[in-house]
Image 1: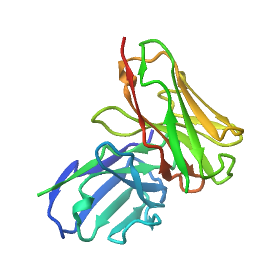
Image 2: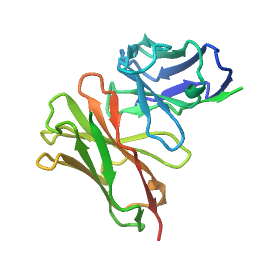
Image 3: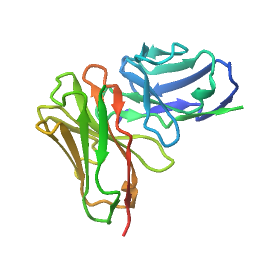
Image 4: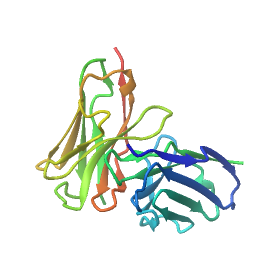
Length: 107
Length: 120
């Protein structure tokens, strides 16, 4: 299985901050990488697919980059509704695997 | 707008079979552009992909669960289903159904999730 490692595991930030979350794959996955946001008691919500494509309806303050094994999710200016847990997922090989999650908390 | 809804028992006894169905509305499960899959999340933990099915019936399972999992599709009812045999407490989780893109593999649509507890 391809292992997906996110860093940091948790992060405290303030409204208006720029935040970056990284995801590293244990082997190359080209750009077959998605990012999700999950709030307590809710299903994950797709933010980014194909490493850098913004899902329809997702605010433009979210962006993704990377290819191969190293990827980033950036939130350019944190809003109150962005405090949540974020997951990356690779779709390069079966089984599809997720990172362990990054919990973004209010400072 | 596509909607997905999981249904099935919320409590299953150890060693029995967990059975869930996902009903899809607002879109066809026979679309050639998507896979239909199951993902689970134990309480307080991360996400685990269980498996996916294509409208044709082709399946892709997580090897860690493959010996116990069956996913099948009923195109006439626009539903797909999950069976997980010989469950233990470790299978207690919120189970989500999701639609995945065929090209990029992204899960763009999810059900709300259903908690299944394995306990006697």
